[in-house]
Length: 97
Length: 416
Image (tube, chains in turn brown, orange):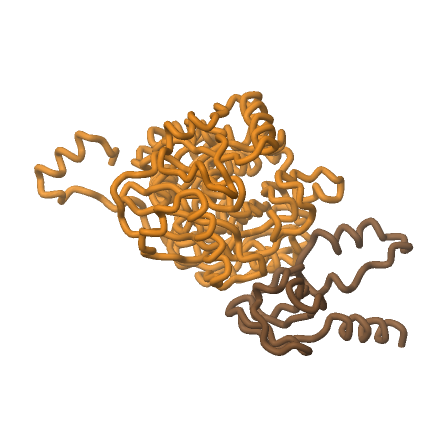
């Protein structure tokens, strides 16, 4: 697999480390009353979709950036690559507005 | 028809015209006591033990394709019970004992061959870890012998003992481990279950779960609606997809694991050998092909094929312990979908939906567990209580911190 890194262009997927579903960017609120339940779900349960999957990859053998990659788990085709930083900033703005 | 040497002789002398179909091809009925979703090794074993041990025969096994077309037909056929943790080892030893009696139990030649497994160690620390593991195995009634270098040399003289980077210092040997003809396991269980009245329904995909008032009442399929008192899902690899039909999320990610077979060679490897300094395991099939594999690719996948970096990694592992493998040509390689669980251990449990049961999360170790998985799942379905050896395989164990993490890698499925 080749990953079209937003800053570096096409890079071999072997340079990256895989973390998992990009939903991991949405860390639950630790101070809420149901934090125990929501952290159980956050840490251990997955949608595990067959099809378009947004996921976190870390460019360990490269510029050490975190990416959010949209990849089809049925075909391995990658359709979008974003910097996880941008995705997380947008999430935070969305939460604040 | 009972299979026996006498039958082989009789049929051979009469032109082999008397053999019957090994199982029927029934149309689905409208209602069953138990509907098992998934006609793989575990599902068929569950049906067999439900009928034989618990007398529950009004059972259907629904299979999307043909039986044994999933992971039971795609694995590297190794059986062993060399686990460490108390939640696992008694279960896998039960499985080993069931393997030993399997062929007589189901009256089918599954070519169970107890040719032994050697887990190599390359350092003092690994030796100590394997000594501990061997002791844990003894405590669960399994067999294990810690071999020094000369012991391994006697068993496998072809290994690269004086490798500068990974010298082989010895190994943990389980003589009762071995290999089994994987397809025959599915066929044997299917034939036995069918002969006791279980309906095996192929080309029947489950498309929905009937959930009324919070209770599972049956399944919708491509061959119509089937109601059931209990629905038992057993579709490792596709667990996420099927359980999503019931609105459940699982502590599972689906990953791809590759396996490899070389061209047929003369007998060279006596049993199963695993590398201790990387992830590589190898055995030789009865046809002579070297059967080997290594790590999963490491990313979510339902594609049933992997990528080249893992192929390179597996081949490096092979070259590091037995350089002669470099002379063998690769015949086939393929991928299968694994239910990778959050702690590397499986689930055999009720779900939050009454009437719906779940068996999955076998990571890439499901084949060896087939008999015990069926045995314990049948026990759960018949009695609503977990079997003594499977009490730890709960879906909710992460909530209580009762993880069974052999690798000690934490809640990261691709590291198990």
